[in-house]
Length: 140
Image (cartoon, rainbow, N blue to C red):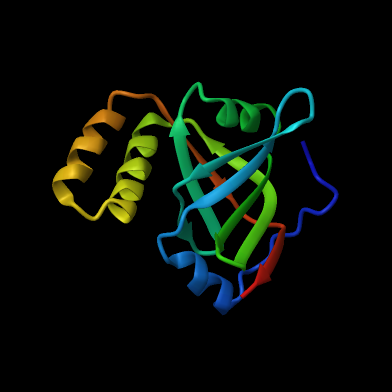
C-alpha cells in the first residue's frame, strides 16, 4: 500500500542523538476496522531507519502485515521524536532472533537476565520490521 508521501527523510543530529539512547518507543498501527492500536516496543537505530521486532501472532504485527503504515514515537517527558512511514517486513526467523538478541542486550544490562530472555525468545517465531521514515517531527 503506497502513501501519498513516500520520500524518505534523514534524521537531524539532535533527533538521532535522542533516539540512540535506549528509550522505549510507542507505535501506532491500524486495526482492520480503522481504529488505532498502540504498543510500547524496544527498537534500535540503523542509519536513518528504526528496527523493531515482535513475536508472530500479536495484534500489532498482524496489523502491520495487513497495512504497513505506522507512526512511531520516542518520548521523554515533553521531548519527543515522531516518525511516520511504512514498515518493511522481514519474516526471516534467523534475522528475527538476531534482532531480538540485539534488542535484549540494548535494554537488559544484566547479562544473565539477558541470556534467560533470549533463550525464551528463541522458542518464539519472530518477525522484524524496519521503518525508514517519510515524515519526522521533533520537539527537543
